[in-house]
Image (tube, rainbow, N blue to C red; front, side, top):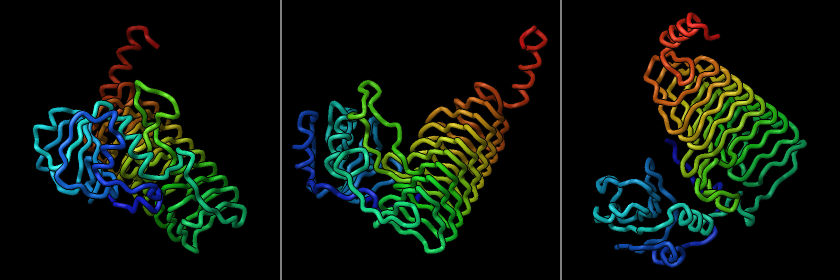
Length: 327
């Protein structure tokens, strides 16, 4: 996964050392072990480790992969203490701890102190902190936010919102589409706008992609939501946070892809397909229209129905049901 410079999109609000982080979240802290009191500069994920960072985990971690002097683990899993991590903080409310720290570390557009500065150009608002190639064409009533990079040959049509995103070359984004929007992440037991988990990742759109009208692509929570190069996305498609789509995908209208789904290369997805979250779809997979995908799918599969199964089995099921009088 491509790394990015987080402060280009989310300026640092405050600087904290680890001991100051502990003071900040004191009501939630149960135990801690700190061997290096470094200044926190970023946030790591389970997939990408960054220097001088925090990592939040609700699972048991392998000490061989995550034991580092410049990473501090914040967890609600007591068993992680047995791994003798160099820097670890055990808390009793991981989601609230995450919110408290992230809202204190970074400016982001889901809190009221976030700001941007815009130039009004040819009927659109363009952030002074964006980087747009001179050959890119931007329609009217569009908004291009802080940190956004748009490559050569891109066509951004009317009423488009792009924020927290890196757009490759020769990409077309059609009318009324929003890219880099807030992901749907929160503590399910504690709902409300004030309890939304800060989403400080981005969206990366590869070269030569076409994105249709009225689509929404949410940015990653910590890393990136990725659209592989040469992908074709129809109108009214929603792609949730942390999704990774391989190159040469073809996704028809009204498809909804839930968070953290990974889709391989050369996928063909019919209209109105729904994906459950946190599943893996292989390469060269074909999914029939109106299917409901709830489990992993292997490479070179063709599936249909709800729940989606091998299309030959699905057809036999339909024939059998019709013979039994179901229509």
